[in-house]
Amino acid sequence: MIELVLGSLDGKDVNLPVHYNRPLQGLFYSLMSESMPYYHDKGTKSDDKKLKLFTYSRIYPHNSFKVYNKRMQFEGTFSIFFASPMDELVEAVLKSLDDQKILRIEKNYFTLLKYEKIISEVKSEELLVKTLSPITAYSTILLPNGSRYTHYFSPYSSDFKKLVEDNLKRKAKALKIEANSSNFSIEPYGITEKNEKLLFYKDIIIKGWTGYFILRGDASLIQLALNSGLGAKNAQGFGMVFPVKHKVKNRELEYTDNQKHKNEFIP
Image (cartoon, rainbow, N blue to C red):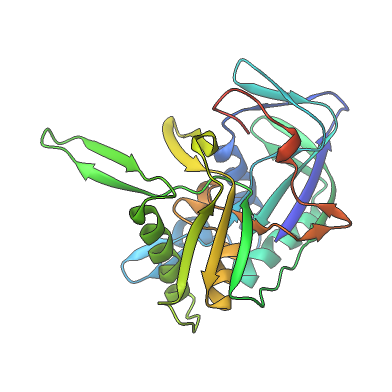
């Protein structure tokens, strides 16, 4: 995992759209492009599917923020987290960060103040994690009139758990990770309806869930979950998780507890 700390280029308030998943995705594809320009189109093959094996977090301001006209505004610096189970992708991003001091998100330019590679080594077969971006699990149904309906599942449903588990096993197969693939499960921990979040990506509403989850099973699969994300749409900024007890330079990696906002479309 890499933490990027950015600040306003001109010292003014940061002003970004609330629904910024796509601009953030563009930032990370740009950072990969120098060393791995093919990954945007080719990804990683898994049977007849093409996987994009990386994920990233929401934006975490270091100070409080406000929302006006579907844009978030705040003073000071903010963090974004990126992770991938592929060392070459992580190294590609690190190489670009070595060379670049100015980064672009949407139409905004930011100063890269610092970045840090964070290593979380899983040694246990049970781990409590917190989401850094919402986990989404869904199925798409073809209706009689030819249109499609997407149904999003609650973390307490068996479908949610099975979809998340199957997704992780598919990634493990693509990466040829030797693990007891039948030994993995995910359970919500204290999740309520307040944890359901709605986000737009390319004008499509995506439902996801934030909060705490318990992962159980093969340590290599739990490690993969930390590096690749859980559930669907990881490369669109969903499903990033981090161990609850992990600290970064003496601070808990939990910015969101002090950043509550009543709007359901929140960062």
